[in-house]
Length: 288
View 1 (cartoon, rainbow, N blue to C red):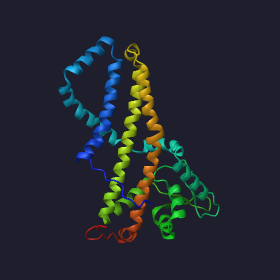
View 2: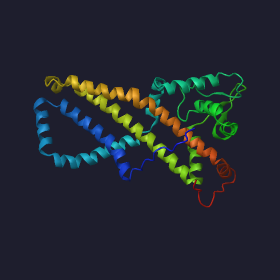
View 3: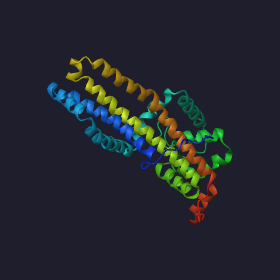
View 4: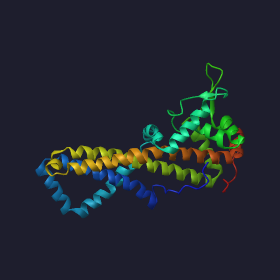
């Protein structure tokens, strides 16, 4: 489990939160404008460029809120689509291959009292099988007992062994209970959640930007101007960063999010259990 604190990210309303939303949106907006310019007829494109160069202050006033709106739209997209893409690229990382091999080896034991809900390489957030293997191999037995009895749900099957599963609703439920009893835990969990969302936003911005730049490179205007190699090279560079850097590491970041939430939930398990059993909550959430 991680021992260091993740850097805190700001909510949308604060200055840092504004730029975390605005910059990916502005980046994508620039690529959309470039695509629009390249698809226009030659005379219209030249006229469009002239209008832009003559009205920079006005377009800046229009472009800033437009970039923020595009960024906000990216921020509202769920993280799951990016996470599904990262699933296929995660084994490109040495840490990814090590984690997957470790989990598959642990689950290959036929004496386990439960079975997989989905294969390790195909499961989605919050990665029930991978986390179960990591906790069983690296953490004290109390953490494993908590994972099996409280964190995960055992779904009955036609076989003798139930399936171990943690769905998003259960994950969010336990996370919210931990929020209510530990203020510092709430800040840390919120920080890593925002970090994941920000990383996913950048991935979405790069996906659409690389596509826009690639399509623009095949338009008549850049071909006639001799800019096609440059534009396609830039699109390829963006796709390379996306495929080999951002998307694989997004899965690592989401695993870190699950680790942090589980750690704080385990640390506050007595209070969480009290809420589940009788609904009693401390007068003020503790600060740790």
